[in-house]
Amino acid sequence: MIVLGIESSAHTFGVGLVRDESPHIIADVRKKYVPSRGGIHPKEASQFFISEGPKAIKEALEGSGVSPMEVDAYAVTLGPGLGPCLRVGATLARGLAAYFEKPLVPVNHAVAHIEIGRYLSGFKDPLVVYLSGGNTMIVAYEEGRYRVFGETLDIALGNFLDTLAREMGLAPPYIVNGKHAIEVCADKGVKFLKELPYVVKGQDVSYSGLLTASLKAVKRGARKEDVCMTAREIAFSAIVEVAERGLAHTGKKELLLVGGVAASQTLRDKFRVMAAERGVEFYAVPPKYAVDNGVMIAFTGLLAFKHGIVVPPEKAYIRQRWRLDEVDIPWVSH
Amino acid sequence: MGESLKNHSLIAVGAEAALYKGRFLNLDVVIKYRLRKPYRLNDLDLQLRIQRTILEAKVIRTLMRAGVKVPPLLYVHPEEGILVLKYIKGSLLRDVVHSGSIDVSCKGLNYVGKYAGRMHSIGVVHGDLTTSNVIITPDNMAYLIDFGLSKFSNRIEDMATDIHLFTRSLESAHYKWKDFLLKCFLRGYFNEKGDEAAKIVAVAKEIRMRGRYVEERRVKKA
Image (tube, rainbow over all chains, first blue to last red; front, side):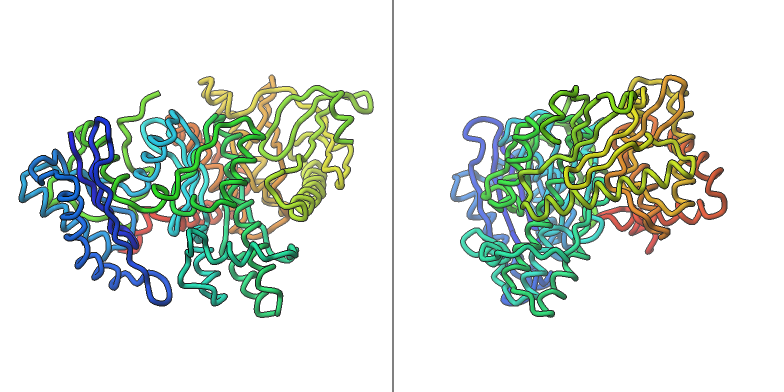
């Protein structure tokens, strides 16, 4: 069985082809929109996807020698994400499914990040920390769904890092040689600034106050590198702390780190140290699959399709705010 | 002092502290030792451990005086991150709910609601109010524990955060019974807190909707 997955929720148009026998991944094509200044401009990103998307699909199929008729189902991210971006992937997927008369499988972007992580780690029942530009949450499977045990009360960790970098004049580009601009700057920091706020509320974190205070510190003349170092230390320690609380609360023995921010080595190290202390197994999705990609959509689509989850193309609406805990997960059982 | 704790029996290791059982002043006690976190920078680690130990001691003393059931505080050593509290015999509310004793759970939740109400009335917020932070004694009384994230505040927003966290701990860990159990909790809370309770609960709902990708938020706008 072969499933083609399309991802277009933010900056990456990804196409993946996977099948249920080895080798599982048969195509992985990505086209990344990089803004010339500022953050992601939804309209610009969607225009980029309109011109690059069809080429990416063609590349994935031709590169792997699979014809569109051999694909058993087409899977697509319907949310959460940026509306104009999601619409491009959804339109193409609806078209493919309708034209070739194949089933269309709706995929939740957050679920896909978790499923690719579970597949790569081999974990059965992990506590999952999902960190990306738009998401910061601690989740675990309970009674048929992934439930949220903790999350950010305001902005996401990736968003925090990006905004801080942009406002400090360190970005774009946000990532150079796999390293975030804030991290490059933080590595040169020496002094911990005691006045920056550390905010953990129960199992939730909050980053907006830290963002404001960090920018104020820069304005007041604090050394940029020290601000970067302190902000990184506080932001990362806070999420590790709430993850540890989640482990204590749920009693889970596996810890899985997924999403784009999982690529940070500093953050991985912190999680690894915490997990080792608690005697919990730890796995961080490698950067290649931690960032947005089509393979995770195809893979999750395959799981869903095998459990009969399909949607008629005319009803495959995008949902910009499709929450993780609204999605039924019939393929997990324990 | 951290070293000498090894002579006591370890009863639990939580997310931020280890709990030891021992004897002190001829009483059974719990010694709460805030652990060093090797993943944190030293400066941040020391700052958080001292601040939280002092604050926790102040909060417990304030609650004791107001008649909220909490383990009585006997000794504090901020630099070592140590609190000594009277030992309370019982089970965690979380385990009571999981064991299926729904009537006992409801009664316990009623108490939690009452104490949360009183706590809020005297300007204290718990900061980590979950079913894991309540002890149910053999005579079915409830004790609030773990004030590690508590603070003094009269802001509706902070009180509502307590209610929001507690509601979510019921939803995420006790999904089957959440609606019934939530009613038990809110009955106690409304009885104690009176008119202001409705306002606080409304803000708690608002906080929930501030979370990302919450569906109700869209419905509300439309």
